[in-house]
Image (cartoon, rainbow, N blue to C red; front, side):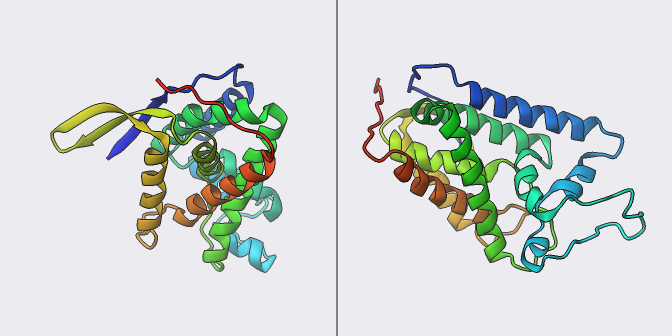
Length: 232
C-alpha cells in the first residue's frame, strides 16, 4: 500500500480555491457529524442516486418517516451537492490529502476561475460515469473523489515528472521515497481498474471516469500552453 504525502512541485501563487474547497468539505462534514439527524441523513437527502437521474423519479429511503420530514433535493441538484458530502472520517481525510497535494498545482496552472469550472466538470463527469454503469442503483453516491480524480488526471498530463514523497508500507517494509508523479498516479489508476466489481461501497467507475474526464478537460483547457515543473 502507498500513501502520497507531498509533492516537490512549488506553486507561484497561494491556492485559494483549493483551500476553500478543503475547508468547505470539512465544514460540511462537521455539520453532518454533529447534526442531530446524523451523517447519513444528509447522505440520503443530498447524495446523487442513479435511479433518480435515469428514471426522473424520486426515491424515498425511509418509508416509516414522513416525506415532509425527509424531503429529497431535486435529482439534478444532487449531482452537485453530492460532491461535498462524505460517508466517514477516513473518506474525507484521504480525499482532502489528495486534493491538497495535487490540487494546488492544477489551480496554479489554470487560475482560480477555470479551476473551479474544471473541478465541477470533473465531478459531474465522474458522477455520470458511475450512473452509466449503475443505471438502476438506488444507493446514494457521495464524495469529492470523482472531482479529485479529475485533478489527478490533469496533474498526470501537466507534471508527470514531478516527484511525490510517498509512504510505502508492505508488512514490515516501511519507507518514504520520492516517486515520479506518473508512477504514483499510474498505480492509483490501475488500482481503480482492478477493483471494478469488488464492491465495498466504493464507486470505482466514478474514480475512473473522473480521471479520464480530467485528462480530456486539461487538454482542452491548456491548448497552446505548457506547464512548468521543478525537479529536485
